[in-house]
Length: 482
Figure 1 (cartoon, one colour):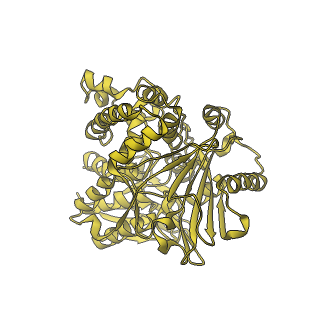
Figure 2 (cartoon, helix red, strand yellow; figure 1 turned 90 degrees about the horizontal axis):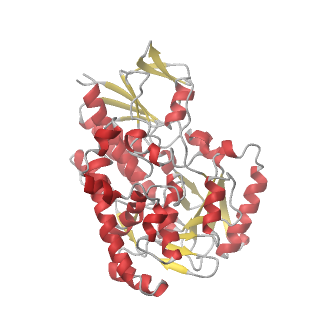
Figure 3 (cartoon, one colour; figure 1 turned 180 degrees about the vertical axis):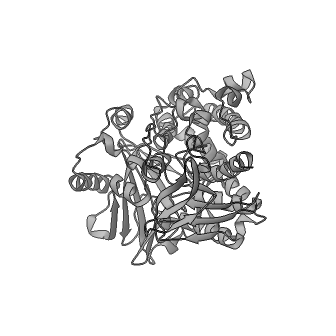
């Protein structure tokens, strides 16, 4: 049956859900509080520099190809992808460096340079992680299943053993790599899942594998070029997108959604509502319900610098790791403080797409992970920003005088701009008790007709996951709504 559906938020999850629901024949309207669509994947344009506010690279391109194919379109007609290879460069204070590449010969040669004798381990890791990746995406990640036993029963006993879910990510990496540098590089992906590699399940070894196997890409025009491609597709399909249209609350009649109340006092009737706002924020602020807060991923402090000239020694994407890697994760995840030995990453997307900066100049994006806001009450953010800014500039060797444009967003800014719960940048964490059916469901158990999409619900955080989540919430609606 055709429904009139309102979507709160035009992030990638909201846009994906809108596309799938419109393809299914529903009337769909998106309400976006900000002047432009994109959510976390927004943009800043200033004096000829363009910065992606959040994601700085695209991975798993097949996910986006499937989204456009579902609407009968060719992804490459909407979004041009520029390859980024070498994809990621890791740097340590002792001068050690490690470059990742989707070219297997180049990757194996780099492993041998860094850690002689590591070629067989990398080959074995690839085979093992490839099997995990296929099992995860073919049988687990994209299924709407509320029962944990039925969810895991999709795997045979031997397949369950293969996932390595009872080992930590670090333990899983130790099976293949004696080199601490390779383990630390691959283990650092855990930071964006809300835990340390010493705590997250070993199945997440699929993260570095997925980037290596499918490559890393920059859409022409930055990641916002992808957002614009998805927005264009949604509008072509007949989705109504209203920007600067902030929702005050979800209107209910008893325990059923009936519409949305806007900040200007109007109430717009809808039969169903999909929220692309963080799940805890939706429940607390838009439903006025008491919430049980899940474990969240870290907050982030982000710098957007328009730099005169080229930045020496940096490619598109560089991750700066600390000398004492384990202590840094302990500080961030358990001691709830910003590590003194600072891990951070730097993206220079203008190195791949020169149009993102004035001719000869550089657009630079810096992301520093922090604990969430509730773990740092009363923190003096202006002082903290100055201190961290100085550390970053010193480590990357950039002179302050070369910065012509600067924007800085603290976790408070991220919370206030996009409704991110507790300033968490990537949504709910991916601990063992917050994956699959143990993660927040993509429908409300308390309010009929309310659904969720985005990093806080299933299947998880990251651009490919929230886009897959748009398909999953559309399938959930088809199965639950007569």
